[in-house]
Image (cartoon, rainbow, N blue to C red; front, side, top):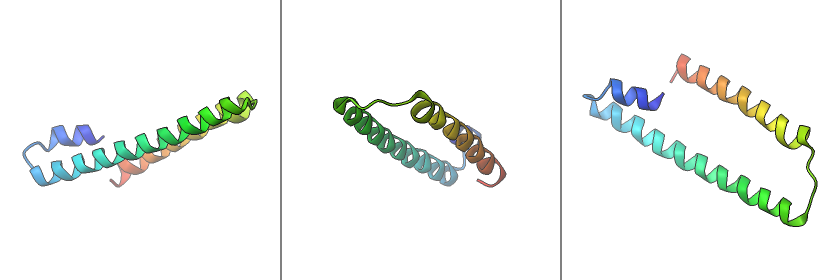
Length: 79
């Protein structure tokens, strides 16, 4: 959505700068969370702990799917 806003309001630099700043901040937050997950996954693998597919894979995907769509809808309704 941010990239579409940048393309749409190219001439309005104040809005474009705010949108770009939000994109940069969001990307940094995503990278930070990704590193947390990678470190935790590495610790689990090193200790040889067993993970069930339902609890450790499918549930997380379903929660992420729901959260993504709710976040997108809220952003469309009121950015």
